[in-house]
Length: 108
Image 1: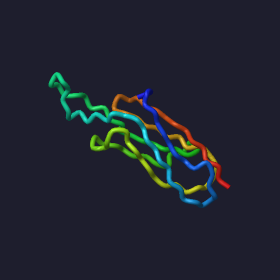
Image 2: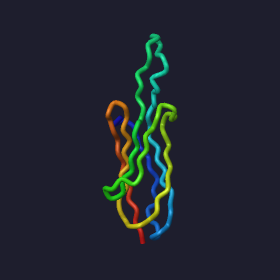
Image 3: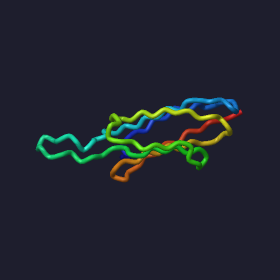
C-alpha cells in the first residue's frame, strides 16, 4: 500500500471552538474478493479495512471499512478546534500494509 497516495484537507487555522470539516482520500483498488480474474479464479480480497485519525497522539476518529466501500475511499468528518497540533491519518489494508499522512492546524 506504500505506493498509494493519501490526500487530506485540514484547515491551516481555526478559532478555538470552531467546528470544521476534515476530508481524506486514499488511492486503493478495494478488491472485494467476489470478482474472478481472466483465468476464472477469484481475485483475493484486498480492501482498506481500517481508517484512524489521531490528534496530538490521541485517537479522535476511527472507522472499519467493509467490501461495499468503493475504490479510492473518501472519508469526511467534523472536528472541533480545541488546541493547535498535528492530525495523523492512517489507512490499513487486508495485507497489513498501512500508509499515513500528517496535517497541522493552528488554533487561536
